[in-house]
Image (cartoon, rainbow, N blue to C red; front, side, top):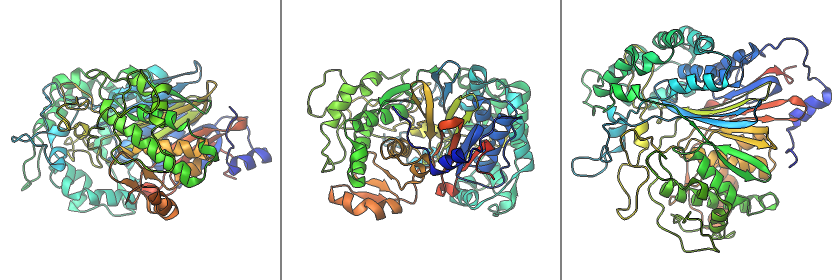
Length: 598
């Protein structure tokens, strides 16, 4: 399939002949956030200026995409501590240019062995209030991020943990400049942070919110990173740091006068037994391209893949905007119905992944979509049983979706050799559980609240109930697209369950609607997750809301959805890095040798 048109910026760069390859690479100066960069030598796109700079420095020094991704992720642990860090987990998707293969690492947190299916039920059998569960030791799963970093470097990288952590260590020691987004996120979580003594001490210095323009330092985190650089992740899973994590979860240190919170179940054995396994990624064909995603326990790859399969039965490229968006919203609702009904941890649940991603199932699901009318919500789940015909009766109700937070962060990296990393990492809700390990500089996740607290339908199995050692279902959707074995683009987003729709809508805008990647990322968004209403940004409602409402869609306005980053491979050896221009304060895109800098 022919490559899609590159941006006008890229065409201008090619026309002027500014691309050079002679001489040693040196990272382009990165002094302010820019959402678009085009050049050679490697590219990084994150939500944060400092993290992008740290990743570019590793690339410029000869590191590859895996090395730079881990370095940038560690930097995000400093500057985005409410979204990600060593107290959380994530999913790492990687394209190896030498072999032409895509692999993935499952760094999802796991439930303690002592956790049963009724862990989040009150004494009367009703689900706990969400925030009571979140702000407690009970919500903390075994962190997977440290082992994910080591596994990524061992499997794909060229550097050690000691080699890639210095940038983040310096950043934690020297500090970063507080912007309005960081201050606002702190303010939004102030009540939660004040419940825990170590958290209030770290993130509310002198008892107050950090001021915009001030410098925020985290020497405790710098020392934690130094320990990991010197000794690897053994201290985190079996040593002194492991003991401190367990003690903190089992007996969270509340601030003086704060109400007691529920203790957690995490034990030393849970940390010592943790693994971040390699998994076969999901794969679907779409418009002649190969789209790779993350397999269960993430529902990102299956839901995005199923929706793409459904949408491929419609000529999206030739439709009017409202017609195409209607089909996108309907396909997303169908995919969420099936995701909620069938996807969970494959170690404990039989997930019919091959059937969910089959063309036969997609055709059966697509034939029930009315191009001129939205289906009543919730859309029932289908029957991915291998026996497909024209428009059968729906199989069952869609089931519950769980209560995912809207935090998380995503980074995308490509190097000069064509290797690509698409990495989504998280501590779940913004600020995670709110619990900081005293003296260690990082928050612990509340990932276990991604479990479905109670079975929605007693007559139907619930794939996402808590269980011993189980990984809660995720919506993280790091994505890599190949054309004939060569990378075309990679992308991902934060945003809880809206990650799936953000990635899906961006792919549709780029591959079907012929928007360039930067415009596809910036486009107004709506997120259809098979609920009574569809979340939509104000700009989306202003442009399309009235016409789509006429088709039967019901919308709930939200300020913003997602915060994607991506990288596209352009003709002539150019790389295009793109990030959000405005959402979450805007992202940061950079390349090693920037052809637009002059």
